Image 1 (cartoon, rainbow, N blue to C red):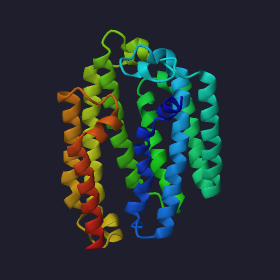
Image 2 (tube, one colour):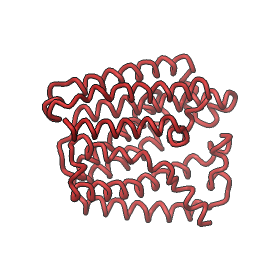
Image 3 (cartoon, rainbow, N blue to C red):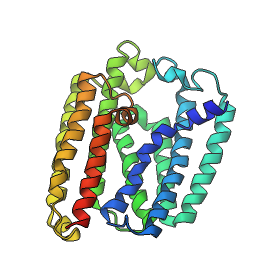
Length: 290
């Protein structure tokens, strides 16, 4: 049972919560031990909160998951774990994460509460509304980034919000595309909203999201405001890493039929992992050595 309890919490998805560290990097606070500690605490709390949300999703979607080639092996869909046990675990994680979030900082607590409310709305209503379903997923990533700013009490960058939501839309549309292709006959049975999508439409949306993400990040690095904030650091030198990362992920989607699980695809692809490390190293080096 312990293995199933760990699996249903989806610890491999916690990497998404690394967005909480974005404000730590972009505010140049990564050398401040106190702020690093607050960011780490925020990360831990959001990991617990997101796990609770995943468990609730698995409970509500266990019937639909049984027709998915991969999701049918999840503990609830496969019947290895009872709903009552899952509810107890979700309740514990919710209590721990929400109480801890308000203890960390009141604004952080409200952000965590907003994240929970958004995901509950998605699970029971918004996932059935075309386009809104994908935008809701993207907004969840934005709330993670905003929570990171609240955790260390720094100003929320509008550039961070814009770049985050555009990149999240790109990943979410890619996931919908993979679901349509991998489940040609049972796609609608697995996710009802897929009847409102087509591969060609999703390809267009991914193209728009890709272009907007690259443009937004380019404008960010060239912005006079950002130049002044980072002491004239040549952040535009990091643009090639962003381009490669997006192009590599598109390669995985279109050539390798990946994209159904963005987290798994990103963590299992060595070139993307190396690229992320190089982008981060280049960004920090340009800021520190300006």
